[in-house]
Length: 420
Ligand code: S3P
Image (cartoon, rainbow, N blue to C red; front, side, top):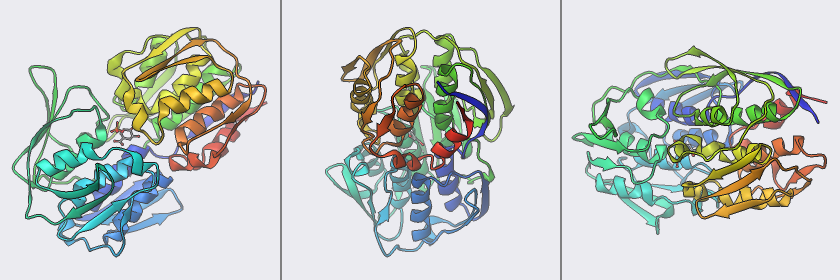
């Protein structure tokens, strides 16, 4: 079996890159980001912003300069805005399109057009937006309104995209907006916009936004993407003889639930926090270890939501039974990820039980080669590329290139640390 050896530096975090672009676009002045992630999703965000007249200059595919301006001075695009495969682009950008002085249309690819948009249409409509949709799905049409008003909104789903959309619309609304979050989700929006946050008597997080709050200059070097790191962490934990260091990776605690799961499974990783502001980041050293499967605590699900495909590979190779429930949100990601995980694990010879809201797998099991279906989902492609390293026979995805949605250099960087 090959091993993973060496040091990896990962492209900037996808969630932070989207927000870097969107928050700088609405701020008067110039912002500058190093290690911006020029993956397909973030390129879709940049293209939409350019189409409304935001000036964006990119350099060597790693840095970006954004000249933002108040959305009141954005220009009417001459074509529909295309979020392509990106849920974050569609849901966060909608908050800004809801308050423009001209109509716009938002479209996406076939996968995004199957993902629910009601979750943002409802609160934005409560705020006064005029949005027409295809029964809660894309395309969305936004019409000018006389102004938005602030709302109190208790999140019905644990979703950082919905939370961010309401808070962003709140920046342009009359009166205060309060978002009430019972189950924590990634906090990049409130952190980067420096929004007032408090915990109420019932332990719920209350985040406020309102018109006139200054949009901070968040120019920075974007930490590496933790969700991308999870593929390398898993590979190095499972492949005997590995020793891998991941440098400058995001260690934002609302993103690193996967590290908590690993700890509960018995892993000991060396983790050094080297930066706290504006986003926590540091390095992780990984060596192979024997792991024991666990029942995943429900409250951790939003914090590991993007890491569940690679967790399924880890679980199949660890001892005991992994039980993952309360994760029906997985059915509404870039693919129905529960179906994609279960079908593909079975395809490579793994016994796995499917539930409506998760799955259960008992390990360790060996992988046989075979053809897998990515369903165009980047995280499925990358998870099974790690499974391929653990299999004697090749595991062949139908569409390996879809990895570029979040991580265009994935295969190249993986190859650079694989040793025979
Ligand atoms: C994201 C939030 C999560 C996550 C997605 C990125 C974000 O989606 O799965 O990859 O940047 O806010 P939900 O908000 O739908 O859970």
